[in-house]
Image (cartoon, rainbow, N blue to C red; front, top):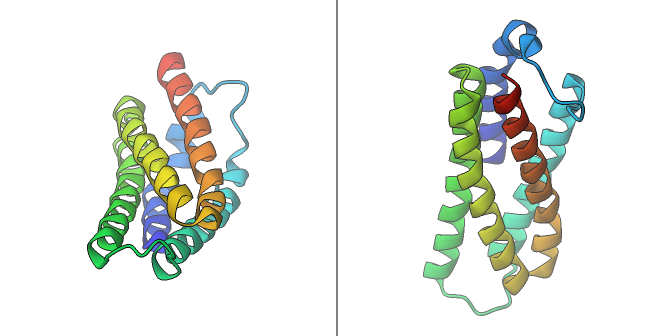
Amino acid sequence: MCYAAAIYGGVVTAPAIPEWYAGLTKPWFSPPNWLFAPVWTTLYAMIAAAIWIAVEFDRSGAEKAQKLRLQLLFVFQMVLNGLWSWAFFGQKSPAIALAILAILLLTGIVTLRIFASRRPLAAWLFLPYVVWLSFAGLLNAAIVRLN
């Protein structure tokens, strides 16, 4: 699921970068374009490991229904990741993308807390994703403000 979201994001994003994204006014803290692909590739690998550890190696005695809810929350986040790419790059709407990102960050924080209570290793693997979402939110908000 992580890599499906990554592939979709790449397909939607790539055509918009050379002209539309390049033409946006970006804040001083905007990373170079080449950095996004390796960061997201690493994050998706860590996210996949985190969900796998949280569900497959759960020592909390959680029932199948609880594990299913966690898996659905994870799928929801991956769908939101795809929707963000669609809104920001596909529809060229940073404002709509920012609203999606706010929901994504909230679900990421909820997931992080669940992981922390079930499998701390999963939480540590997931934490960089939540930090990156926070940074992405600041970047997205700055782009909305500047454009």
